[in-house]
Length: 412
Ligand SMILES: [Zn+2]
Image (cartoon, rainbow, N blue to C red; front, side):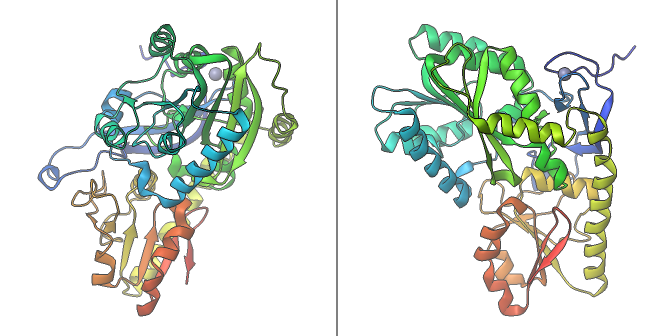
């Protein structure tokens, strides 16, 4: 007998659907030309909300070891993300008084895109990154990196070696750990008594308000409101003492956690402010979540309406980018080479491969100049301003941009 899904934080049975996007391939499993005729595994993308703790989540269909050990995402390929990281570094050094005696540990440190700025300032760092190919790039840049998955066991080992951290950073990783409790317990163990952890993750409120259904993919196991995040950290002896709302990834939260015992750091008024706003929006009740499915279906209809209209005029469309979110969107909407002739990506690792599921070919960006498409469909819409700037030259031949989220819109 199949036992229904249970909450990865509180183990209550999951009954409330947030959105069911059907079956999709793993969004980072780009397909080589040689593999195009082979079977491709598809897994459900069905997001539930826990009625007890409010954590929105996917079941763990695929283990992180399958997803993250060879990963095509290199953070350093996005200019605005680098800028965001640099600004963060300066803020953190100032606010937490970090210097050559401190230790900064980043969980899922990717290619060293962030820790490099601490290294520049002479502050000791340690990156933890499970994807070997990505960690290698960081190490070559002079960012010491352990090729490991983070959890309590690793935290205990580091603590035993005297490597507790003044600052633990986790950017876009909390959503990606299936063992959420083990991960947060690990942060508790890794932090020095007066240490601080900052974590950034997409804010569920923005996801719902702005139809960002494409940020749902198998690599994202959890989707957090502030209410849910507070509960989870509190359960492991960590207090959220500040929170910022950031524009990154379509709207993220940056939470600041400290040991519950460390009362020297007062809780900022922003914490109560955000909590109140989420309660006022009804996020502690299931009715707030039940309308989202229909909103997503309508967003899909609008995207298809836009693309069908363009194709009926005999115009050409190409994609820009090959991000994970693009793959959810294209697979859910059923957009293949019948709409997009190809897509381009700056990441050489992806060029020459095909998008999972839809098998749209990925070329270097220069392809756009060569083929002069009428429309460029911007898949990483969270970087749309940067991309529209970079591709301003398509206006020379009357090219225009399509941004699909929050709803399909044409930009001149
Ligand atoms: Zn729960």
